[in-house]
Amino acid sequence: MRIGETFSAEFDNGCKIYVEQAGPLRSDTLVQIYGPDESFRLHCQYRIKLKMKGINPNTMAGHKDSPVFIFFKDGQNYELNFPK
Image (cartoon, rainbow, N blue to C red; front, side, top):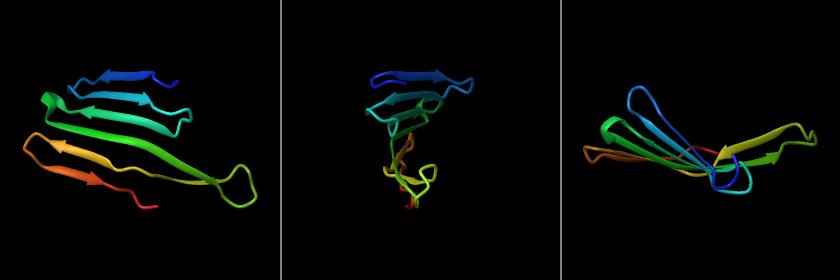
């Protein structure tokens, strides 16, 4: 995917997914998932941070650096954060 390109799909169960490349590196990606009949919405930005690990250029360490938000039709909302 290139910047501004959007991937979208609808699954057999009615879930819809949209993915957009938001930055020049593949580390910035926007994701939206909608449940059947909009029973839930999931929104997140994948911002992956990578760094070289040791002196071997083929070894990297990384983590997802942004929260995931889930909104349910009944009013429950969650924010998920991933440990570093």
